[in-house]
Image (cartoon, rainbow, N blue to C red; front, side, top):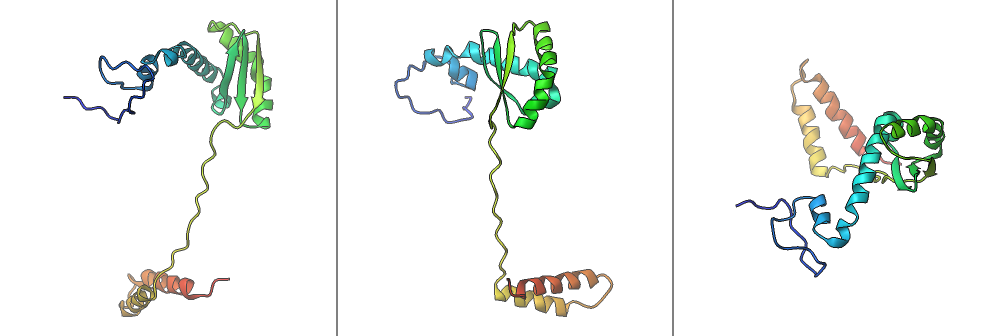
Length: 169
């Protein structure tokens, strides 16, 4: 018996069909609901347009997304004004490439909009060694035989002890 790779959400009467195999992906989920299924043609069309834009301007379009495409007007989101200025110079090339691929585009507009999430700030904590650990490291640094092989290890242990015992400002 094949087990699903996720836990499906409980049914709440949203019209999801229960007959047939379990939902295996996002597109299957969207197709399984009449309301969501109506979005599939638009999603598919915008995904294809996004892919064609990325092929036309691979370096620039990496950070851009399509916001809207209606009535021949393409609206693109850029993360900052500098990229928007560079992209604006390339719009005739982009429009020409898209028209060659069959897209009917009468104009392209740019909107500066932060669309991708910024990586969270990771706060690092300073490692605080307990006194027992400090004593053990100090004993190790004095117990090691003074040889060429142990020189760097002894120096590193003493440096670490000095660093952890100095008062912090």
